[in-house]
Length: 177
Image 1: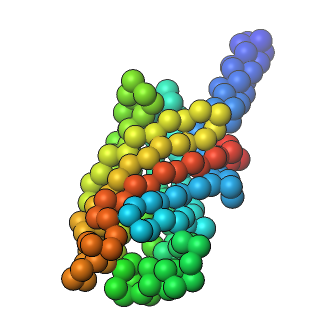
Image 2: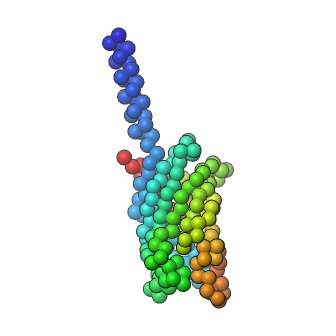
C-alpha cells in the first residue's frame, strides 16, 4: 500500500512538472519591431505589450491580446510624428491604442495564421495575419487599408499617402514563469 501511494505521489509530481516545463505563456521581449510602410510614410511603434499564449501543438488554446501605443509612433520626422498623433490621422488623445485580439489559429504550409479583431481609431475589423514562429520569434507581415479604419480620410490625403499600409513585425518572446 505504501508503494502504491508513493507511485501515485511520484506520478502526480511528474504530471505537475510537465505542465511547468511546457508552459505556453510568453513574455514579449523589449527588442520587438513593429514596422509600417506605405507611399510617403514609414516608421514603427516603440511601445508594444500584450498577453501571448501560444503552443504549436495546441493551437485551440493559443491566444494573443496585443496593444501598440499610438503615442509611441516614430517616423524619424518630428512633424510627421506630430501629424500622425493628431486628430487628422490616428487621434492619439481619443484613441490611444491599436489593439489586436485573436479568435482562432491555424497551421499553414508556410507557418501559421491567426484570425482576430484589429481595432484602430475606434474601428474594429476581423483580419487574418500570417506568421512564423521560429527560435521564440514571431515574424510576419500583412497590409491594412487605412481608410477602412478612418485614418487620414481628409480630402487629398490619398494622393500623398498610400491607402494600403504594409506592417512587418518581429516579436521575440521568452517563456514566462
